[in-house]
Structure formats: structure tokens, C-alpha cells
Image 1 (cartoon, rainbow, N blue to C red):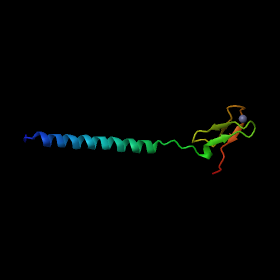
Image 2 (image 1 turned 60 degrees about the horizontal axis):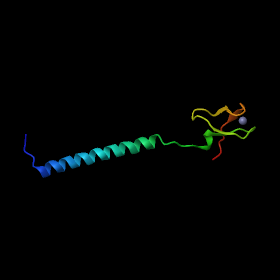
Image 3 (image 1 turned 120 degrees about the vertical axis):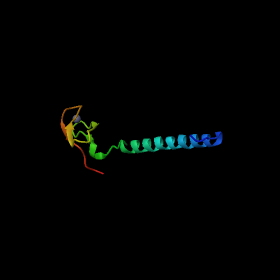
Length: 78
Ligand SMILES: [Zn+2]
């Protein structure tokens, strides 16, 4: 082992701690960006009969209105 004085050890500790903190912040930023919740008009469904608005899962293009049971198609408007 090689001797490390206090200033060098503290500097190494500080650099490693900041690098770890930066890695956690970058990982959290990337995770949030990947899981960002986006609501688009294509997934917002409005029942033509009772005008009840509800959200369809991303994989579906149509679904039953939870209010009246009529089949509704997601709007494609932008
Ligand atoms: Zn309805």
C-alpha cells in the first residue's frame, strides 16, 4: 500500500462521492424520461352518447364507455 495523506484522501473521497451522486442523478433523469407519462388525444376517448371522457390503455384503439357501456373509438385529432 502507498501512504495517502489526509488532503489527498479527502479529495479522492469527495471526487468519488460526487461521481456517485452524478451517476445517480443521470440514472434518475434517464429513468424519468423513459417513463414520462404522456396523454395524447389518441388515448383520450369521449363517448358520443353520454359525453363521458375516459382514458384508453395505450395498446387499445377502442373500448367500452364505463358510464353507459357503448363501444367508443379513440379520437385521432391532434
Ligand atoms: Zn357513454
